Image 1 (cartoon, protein in one colour):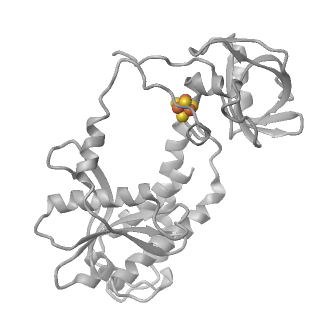
Image 2 (image 1 turned 90 degrees about the horizontal axis):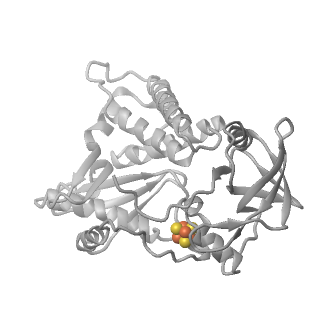
Image 3 (image 1 turned 45 degrees about the vertical axis):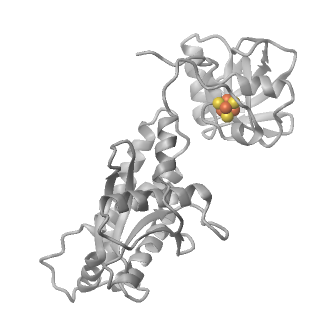
Length: 346
Ligand code: SF4
């Protein structure tokens, strides 16, 4: 959902920057707010469709449209500032003002490719740098709709911004002044990424991504496994949980289980925790059982398994623990336990 929200804002900024207003009266006001709203709603709808078409998705939060609107206002604020304009209400933006903003935008959503063709990035905005007008400086700007940094940019975000900057420098060596900025709409602050070129390191990273017959050796750890998207197909974290190397506490946790019984009408279920017997995903039963209440998507998935007469163990992702029972809903995942142990061959 945060990714969809971010994309809707990005696409709306891009569409507004590329809006054809060449034939409009420069004094016209009162048009921008409704246009921005319409464009945002159109992009919001497109994101919703894509989200709902994705097989593993949680609930779509309609109420976050107002957050998207706030994010859009924050993102547009950067453009007004860089164009040398005061902070404006969207309803006060005239055609002439928006032309001034469009005048500093050199590119939107541009694809950057390294000379060697191995590295690629997509920048959100390339704009004229008002602080380096004489040198015809450029700003590579990346819109950020997530949580802003407490003080400094996160190392990964900084590297991403430097990567765009360096690709742009490689493409346009005649431009001496190219800076990269992360524009955080939630606190309306632009963070500059400084530092030496990172292209060499990026090429080395690319070279180390060669496909191998067998997967990398698993290295389970609390920080790595907690939010790992691969967990449902990786037997090692479950072995580590069993051996006490990973904690299994917390309000939200994952389980590997067998369904003992379920009442499809109420969603009340009983599960039996499975015990790993090797590192390849083989399991056996246990005498540890727990009750669960299933709703929404989780209940639908279990019902489908019952209908398909699918037997075997189940991965339960993000179950919410409350007392002695757990809750599963739209935020959870229910998948057949089916570890992937080697690379697929095509
Ligand atoms: S769940 Fe498996 S793949 Fe994911 S971080 Fe843990 S060990 Fe690695």
